[in-house]
Length: 325
Image (spheres, rainbow, N blue to C red):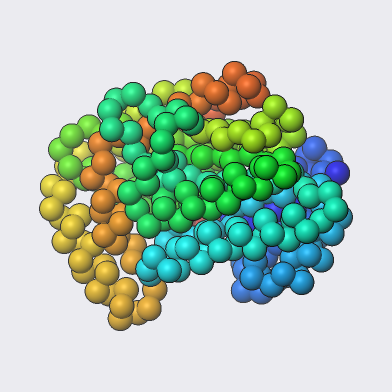
């Protein structure tokens, strides 16, 4: 059994590669020439250097592959065109090359809760709810999902939609941990927003179950914790893991809009994606980013194995050991 993993050098991808190797799966890691390989360079894997826009390279990379795990993409971009190029067009190219094989490989696409959009009520989203993405990122992921649905008509494929993911090696949520270390839990808005999250180990468990089960073919699954929580509770759990006393501050949402304006202007100066752009500000304003894991539990036997307390403690220890905190 051989698997190709795109985004293999990243936070989630590197954990997936390790898990596949533990199952004695031969792994080919598709990376760009400029990719940082710090998490996978010590692993017994094949490294394929190229891009998702080179069809000849892709054809060679998947020649003897049975499974494709497509994780590569952009969570930050300067504009809509960049999001669609990285998340939609790149997926389209990879799917096209896979279908050109005599026996197309099973395709597991790691999308996002953003493709489905936020829940309009306190009821968690399920996979059959009509997607209503509200950001350029979510729209580009939903467009990519539709391409995968076309692939499903000719070959096996599964779509995985994770919510916010945390764990060792993650840099996206690191700023929140750093604020907690300074004794501050900063929450945008005054309402207690509900969110779904998942530890990277549990997400990888769900991705692998989808990849190795025929029951997952032509299905879409949310992979998340058993219950939703809010960022104030998350902050308190992190504070306990750090043995810190914190002050919780609720930031009026107008400040997220102001931050987005200045961040967008700075992005135009330094030609880099804005950390807090108008899309992110719209994302933050939503009261419910929640989904249900009931279908993947029922179909594939998924079980949440990492509690928030355990996962947070593990993450704090890793950040500390690696001098990220």
